[in-house]
Image 1 (cartoon, helix red, strand yellow):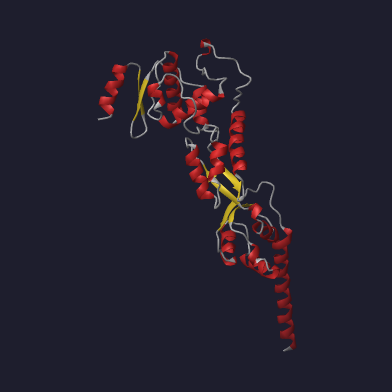
Image 2 (cartoon, rainbow, N blue to C red):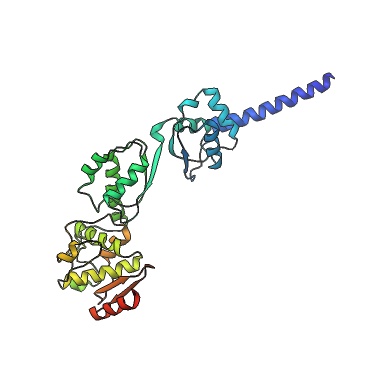
Length: 308
């Protein structure tokens, strides 16, 4: 009997040591690999420790879900866990996860701004993303920046200010221009002999204005370059641009005074590297394909053929 109890005791000790060792390892000792990429974890208001544990397990952030719950209970940190969107790296220790989830500064909001969104459309997106978004301050800071708030997927701190949001979107445009080797300050002025190079190549404002028009007309990079070539042809002969997206272009020659939205990089590149074409007209079909024409007569014929 004593021998049997001894074996039970030894088995108990082994289990305690194994579990205890695993607990200490997962809670304190592990660290992310150098190539590990953060994953998104969304904690909503009112989520229980169990619910957060499930989020972490599904994201591959905890190997032993019970350990997370045990640690939270032992450290009495249940009420410190925050709601928000967190980007956490697999391999992070449980103690570090709890610390990150307990600090609202680490909570992030992810917002995707599509190409061609106006400042007002961006504002609506931000109002959805942030519980207390200052729309009045946004209107003040973004009013003169239509066209310069680059469309992208952003991660902002949960308590980010309007100024920080605007600065990040504005600086992203600068960064993306550099990444695409676009420099409006150090460039050779346009010469006709340059061929497929835009006359706006040294004019950031003009490029953004024209790109914003193209952004609303067509979708593919190829069509954007073709339409850029058409618009530049019209400008060269003094023909109004006449784009459906801007009433200004029907009443006046030349570019509108400011961008009508915030264009993406494909539209900007299309303006800077337009297709060489003799076309002056185009129509966009409901299936988003585009039909081109050199003369007004051809254009009318295309309308009668494709827009019945």
